[in-house]
Image (cartoon, rainbow, N blue to C red; front, side, top):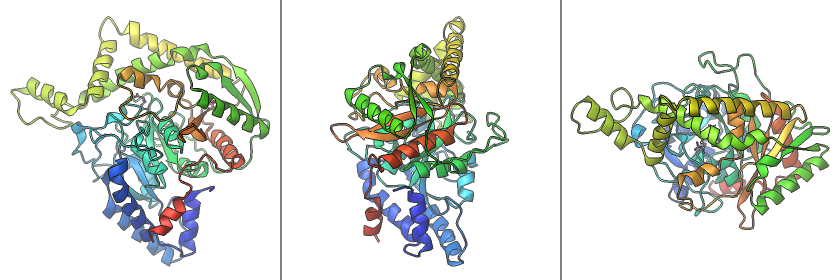
Length: 490
Ligand code: GLN
């Protein structure tokens, strides 16, 4: 299937199905699957049906639809939605209702996107498995004893389990790509600044980006085109950099050079290595040329990421004091006690852990040794990528070293941190990267390949992923029976 979004529009135009019927079908599926997958935190049924009726009105007047109009979708619950609670999967914000919309949601809402609800995540997007959510972990639709990855756990589980056609996630160190890989779907982390962060509740502002998770490459490209544009109210948004991902999507990859970087292959499982080798061969068959590269600077990416991300998180989360922001404790004795108790009760273990780490590396006497040093190394990593792209057009690597692990399997937080080893470099360098399905392990769990390119190369990366998807006839997509699931409910 090339595009679920296009297929749905076709059904609408041919009057096979109304937008309201399709929306009801997805709402029913969510209700039925919620106990199994825990993908959603909030379901926005009334909003979805209202939006669907607007779209049906347009269809009955024979009006043309905008590219994402009437498509049932979801947002990670750290993306602000006016009048709809936005929890960040934290007790701290579990009753918070924003008074404004995130820029990306303004864009999609303007297209009459049908918002089904807000999806589960690791608390404040800190985690790699979905397990740190205050609302309990989401589960992998391919096998429910497995983690869906994180932190955009619910969004990937919802798209992989056909509880939404597409969704938006956020990626600070891999949170779109890694869950996309674990759930067998496509996830794109855009260039830093290509998509506005306004209204995304901050984790680490110098690394965070919003991006799409979708079942097919074409759908991811359609969503990218809808959300990537300059936002004058986000100081980090890149002006005049509209990209068109859809335009050359089918043009093939003949003559492109791709780099296989030795450092990314450290510690990966045999099955992931095999799938990657097959993917490389498929790209060669399509006319691309392989070059082998070494980028030693990447070896320090993980510690650099955790120093910078924790420091920025500690600073961003300072605002939740129970006075102006965040849930206030019930009983307290004076202002200091109020703040201490509100923060102590409102944040979960992993968030506290990071606030402590971040505060430590920013404290006097340690700032130079940790934060400043990490910044210097970050520049080296950027430089290494810059060098690499003088030898090739994009890099091919695994998205994760292994496949979805069991919920509860990794006890120590450092074991979770290790799983981000392949994804954090792109965030540190501000580069676009995507994950697309490229195989299955012996247990049928999806394997993802990661493509990383120079700034604003999203169209190229999606073109490569689309060529691969076409060449392999979509055989690594999950949920091929999605149409039956829709029709059986009608
Ligand atoms: N897993 C990484 C972390 O825990 C990345 C999180 C993210 O990208 N939001 O920090």
